[in-house]
Image 1 (cartoon, rainbow, N blue to C red):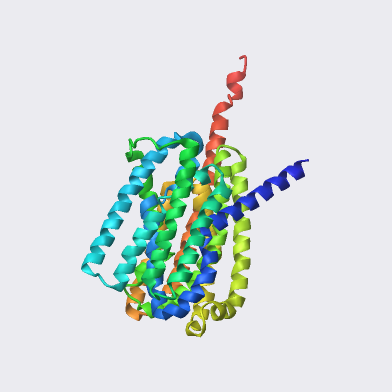
Image 2 (cartoon, rainbow, N blue to C red):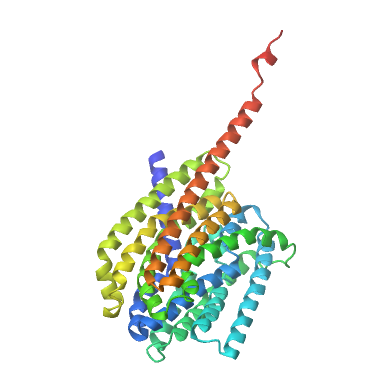
Length: 428
């Protein structure tokens, strides 16, 4: 009987991982269709500009949601949901207004192609962060999240296929992504309003901002050498070099994102057993399983790199094969980072641990940025990414181990304090 229950639970976890994968990272399935089109229409330079915009898109989503969507999802079972929603909406709307104003100013003064892509990407990513998807994740409603995200992905796919051949521009590709966020926002808000009603009037925003400050700082630091690295390295590398890097990076990040949902799917489950003795045992087993899968994916990607680049991007991107193989080495490291942050530190509300990891990674990346300024070589970007990701993963593995030992010491101390010494129990 217990074996049947365990099997059912495992199937439920696998099902939820699949829902989160498609819902949260379904854009990579769309990417598999649209990237070959974009690569052939835009060339290496156009794809490089698009890479800058996509990096800014990722950063914009972080700026607006403060990087705390997962933390708020974990808080839902014990919080006033509508008050939480009202506070979070006010914060996000204010930040998005600033990004939209910056885009308007940039377009008015003509800041140039790269800067325009950065501003447009920030605004598009910020708009996407206005969804109520975090509420669905906190409730464990992964299928609903997947369904609403899928609508937006289909809209993006249709827009890109229709418009990009007629107007082959990186700006058009990013505008398609911006517009596709609208149906996702509308559907998630419709769902949460029907289920919970309208958000409450915002009040006492400072605790949320205080929680968000270290997390946002950490996520931005991580983005500087991760998915947002295109924005950083645009200052020292030309668009063609960034295009070659982007070809391999898109494939690696797509596979990385298939591993990230493990932490998201386990988040509500881990939050429910946060005070249980099973927490650390389950966290350790899940982490080891995730790293094992990531290592296997790395080996497959290394072998398949020439075929993938040829089929997806074409002959112009042959130089990306070697870049892809080296960057594939980050997958086990990013698996550690993603899982520990999402399913462990988030539940433990360890914002300090998250922040320190970001500082470590950014410090390593800053050194490589200095090297890139001198060499102007795309290889600097690749090796800088690998070293930064490995260094950060080592910190998060250490932080998780440290939390385990600290909590065990605390538990032993409490047990010892509860035991009355034998001398005090003696009738003499």
